Image 1 (tube, rainbow, N blue to C red):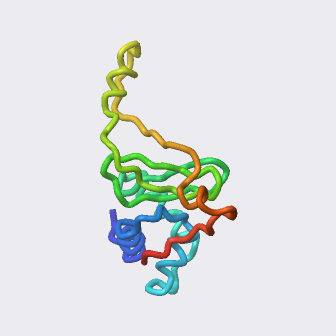
Image 2 (spheres, rainbow, N blue to C red):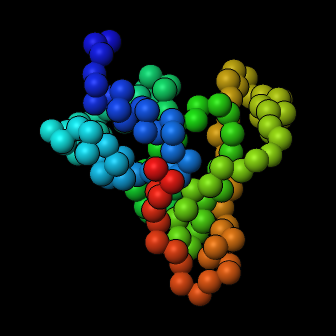
Length: 136
């Protein structure tokens, strides 16, 4: 695959982010260093990076897809109220691959699990927080 400075910028941003941004958030974050980039280019590169296994796409509820530069297997919590996507620090549930394979004649290669509920911030406030990626 041909090198792309824009793709590298997207990947670098996602690998440094912990907030699981949307495509629009990625676009806004990298636009300063890539003033000629279009939102369409960001979407195409996010799709390519997902297909190549360089990033993960998180689809939940009715909101936009979110992206994660951390491809080490881990789990996510998705808030039903504000839509925040948070990493869960917990032990691997890899044993569910064996449970799933027990009465399945195909091959189980892995699993993806998301946990849903209300995040701590929404529990502590009456109004859901605005979604943002502010650590960068």
